[in-house]
Image 1 (spheres, helix red, strand yellow):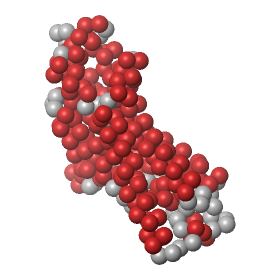
Image 2: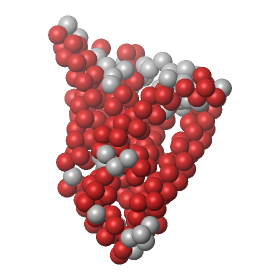
Image 3: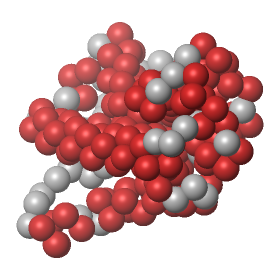
Image 4: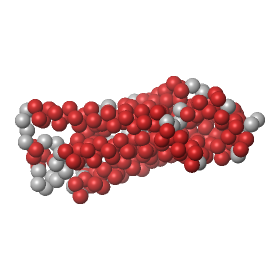
Length: 264
């Protein structure tokens, strides 16, 4: 397991996922900040550090590239191991079950870290540049969440620290599940393009309410766990939906590895 974790941070894919996550967040915040400077807004009338930190999620392109970043962080390495024969060699040293467990855990960790560390770094930078969120002192820092949104009260506490933590936790959980989906795709279709395209395709079908159109099921958006509008009811529904996706993906990954490596 330690060797697998070390390989994460030596991988260009991991740092690419981190960089893309960071830059998509920065795309919104930097343009907003530069626009405020160009019109001569004083500091107290500019967006708070909290708004700038999460704006790229709520209004930028972060959600669109999220499944790609979660998949490419480490799960695509499954393709290299299958094609090179490394996976078969590792199974010979242990078992298919052990191999699947280590690979899944490492990929989940990589996906969670690549996305949440980018979010954390982005937030730290803006808390050093902009005014920390303080709606009691600055009216412009008020965020008008719906009454049942879990962030409605969190963002006013300790400059929004509980909200930062909640968003990061939802992001990490979601990314980890998409990493397992990518592993399942890689096990059945050992091609790197397919390894991140299939999770992205599922993500976009989900976000387009395909489940409601074809099955009559209403489920929250796949980014609900780290997006605005997250109510307790939507939280439970999103966790249940991700639980189903995780179970199906893990079963498919186990079956795919068993199929390819059972004679190792």
